[in-house]
Figure 1 (tube, one colour):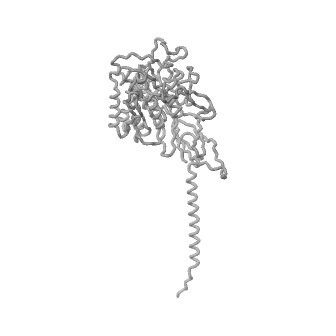
Figure 2: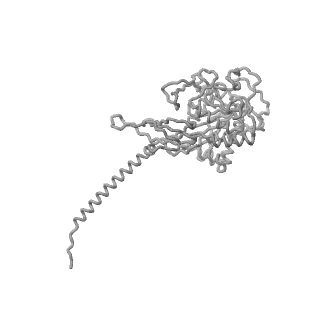
Figure 3: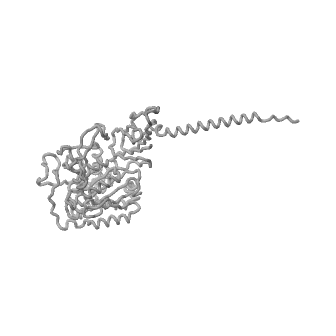
Length: 489
């Protein structure tokens, strides 16, 4: 039973180059949201060094001018842009809908790949924009991203890398009704980023997790588990993740300039840094986006331009934590604009500031090309660490190995042996952990992977030897039985 595990290490070498180049060309200081006072619903800013944000949903709606959406695509124009993209770039794309909004607007998705719609042993990444109706920058930037990749495929190495090595899915708007109404919530005035099943965290021994300091068990708060009360946009995203296993993802928001990572909430609902089991990986992913950005990493409010969600302000029912727990999808919440709804003339600048961040974050999944074998699995982990990797499959014996991961990714191949009834006499399987350095497989691993082939070759050679021996013996007998010829004078 062959199983391939793809362990991806995230490297910053190329990303730092792009960031340095951008900083040299456009030196600037990052701006954060300004708060002149603490209105009702905000936490006391003295409780944390970061900026105060909404702990619970603020039901008051901002007062927008009638022409604030001037220059932004309407929902109809956005739908046309998506379909036009599909017509123009059909060889590397697929257009599909994951559902509808409350008012029946289709939730269109653009898939970009050299083999769109096909199952491949490649990681999948998704971008989601416009989760909050009054934060529309993401929907504009994601259409620009799709078109840039299409225009630069086979011309730019980064665009080609993404198309040929991952399946990129782009949902420009999750909340088209909220956009039309110019408000945060959807048509039912529900904040979609508070509508997902929530969770609390406690340590237990029944569910293993990839972490050396213990085992973790996740459960959701029952108060947010009523599927009948959930919004159609939320249900559409949840069903989407049941159909496609995403390795990583990001949602685009507005109102600050920072890359946010799990956990978003705490077990006791207080505000403090609450890291998840993959905290190092999430910090690395967030840093990829921040360091590739025009000025996010220069933030004076968020060191390095990144933040733990619970440390910033706890939220519950968020999509980010649900992705991580439910589907093992490593999701970031990206605040890409200080202004939630900036003037449309700023969109080209915002695109230039965020373009490399969007591309590099998606490309961070591409570190190794997996083979076409059954049970491919992709896992993001930070480099320069020692990990124990266990491959399990019902009906087969598990196997374990250790790896020392460097800056490059590595592929592990496991051949699992079927479970045999205990009455059969077998040698015990050695599951000792032998460390494998990245890119330097041991001789023992090489022998283990090819032992079956060697055994077959040995059997064939033995059979050939037996046949050859019989042939020689037969020839000798025939020679002895030949009649003697008389000498002639």
